[in-house]
Structures are given as structure tokens and as C-alpha cells.
Amino acid sequence: MSQDYIKTSEMLNSLRVFFEENIPFNKVLGLQVVSLDMENICIRIDMKESLIGNPVKKILHGGVISSVLDVTGGIVAMAGVVEQMEGRSIEDVSRRLLKIGTIDLRIDYLRPGEGEYFLATGTIMRTGQKVSVVRMQFHNDKERLIAAGTGTYIIG
Image 1 (cartoon, rainbow, N blue to C red):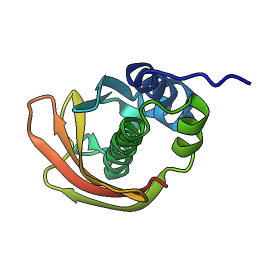
Image 2 (image 1 turned 135 degrees about the vertical axis):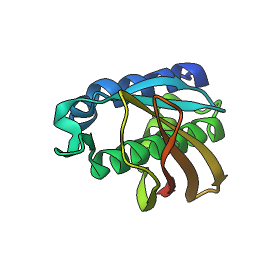
Image 3 (image 1 turned 180 degrees about the vertical axis):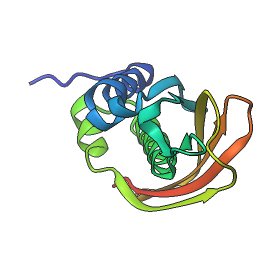
């Protein structure tokens, strides 16, 4: 039985497609992966009425913010695993990615979620054999920092 090997760029594109098209909750959020490579991730959501948490002030629900930051952190952790496993078979990488999950998530809400759209970014702080720690930020369309977070993800 021959094993197929995949390029890192192809695996990252597969992650983008999976998160945008195969996770129903991400579709409800309207989540779009704007960029994804080993150095950079950017996720966008557009403001829409169904995401409002305060109907008087018309601001984004805090749960939406934490969800988007968690997805951002998870994808960053997965990208780190893909990089660690470069040269391994698709099956090996896929098995490892299926084990990834959130251990801990801390969100600091800094400003109300006002804006027409929002961008979440994330970077790896440290990746080991079992755990990855990621720092995430959530900005509005005026580049104001709305929230920041740290996520810890089981990766092995």
C-alpha cells in the first residue's frame, strides 16, 4: 500500500476549506479564512444582526468573539503541527490533527464589539510535543483592538 504525501501549502489550504465549509457553526458565523500560512493567520467575520449581543447598542456578542478567537487559535495550533510533521504521510498528519482540542481559553474583552467587520489573528507562542500555546487578537474594521486571548491546545 503506497502512502501519499502532501505539501504543507496543500494541507494548509485543506484546513482553510475544512474550517470554512465543513463546520456548521463557522458557517453561521460567516467565518472566512483571509490568510493562512506558517507565519500568519487572519480570519474575518462580517457584522450581521444574528451576531448582536446587545440589541440596544448593536454590538457583537462576546460569545462570538471568544468563538472566533478559539477557532483562530485552533487553526494556528494545527498549522504548527503541519509544520512539525512535514514530510509525513497524509494519514499520519490527519490522525494527529483529529486529536487537537482546546484545553484552556482566556479572553480579555477590551472594547465593545462595534464595527462593520472584524479580523482575528493568531501566532504560536510555543509548541511542544503535546501542547501548543497561541496568542490571538480581535480587531474591528478601524483596526481597534476589541479583544485579546491566549489558548492552550492539546496537539499530541
